[in-house]
Image 1 (cartoon, rainbow over the protein chains, first blue to last red):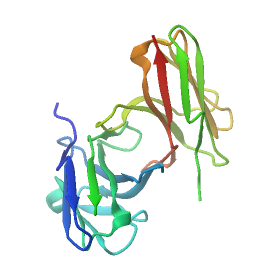
Image 2 (image 1 turned 90 degrees about the horizontal axis):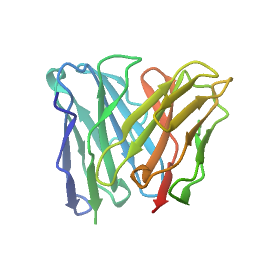
Image 3 (image 1 turned 30 degrees about the vertical axis):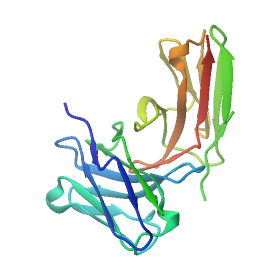
Image 4 (image 1 turned 90 degrees about the vertical axis):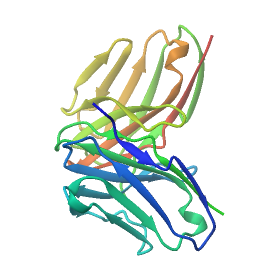
Amino acid sequence: EAGVTQFPSHSVIEKGQTVTLRCDPISGHDNLYWYRRVMGKEIKFLLHFVKESKQDESGMPNNRFLAERTGGTYSTLKVQPAELEDSGVYFCASRLGTGRGYTFGSGTRLTVV
Amino acid sequence: TQLLEQSPQFLSIQEGENLTVYCNSSSVFSSLQWYRQEPGEGPVLLVTVVTGGEVKKLKRLTFQFGDARKDSSLHITAAQTGDTGLYLCAGAIRDDKIIFGKGTRLHILP
């Protein structure tokens, strides 16, 4: 079984530019989550999709962040325009249903300069 | 704001010694998970504990969930160099969201 795949693994962009992160969950996993770890801080929840619907987006920092999951398969997280404080590692996780364990991707390390 | 305090933040011990990592909160969790994360990788789930007082063992690793479901511990017996890594606890505040501790960076010396 293929794991959760994230692309790109690293991204360095200038302040004000746009970046789109992609996550391919494990096939058949309806639940998809985005998390972020900023340097020195704990991993924090951003949002949760159930299929193509946003179940909980209470962790999204502001309206510069837009997450989509068209067709309930892969998801994208777009940051526009990027700011310096957006730097960190963005993790995607998926799971089959509640009560099951999470499978995390390897993350995208975003650096905004 | 719900917080999960993990201690110690760093731990360096000799191979063969025992160690315990703690995870504490003032919040009650429906379940608590322990993850291990290697550099450049995402967290990998080790175990989930659900019931207050529950104890789970994974070879030399023993996980315990507090009776009140507010705290947990990870005990490693006879640590090996292969146990080196970042250990994270994460509490489920609802089935659809978990909050993480900052992690314990463990280094086992040969």
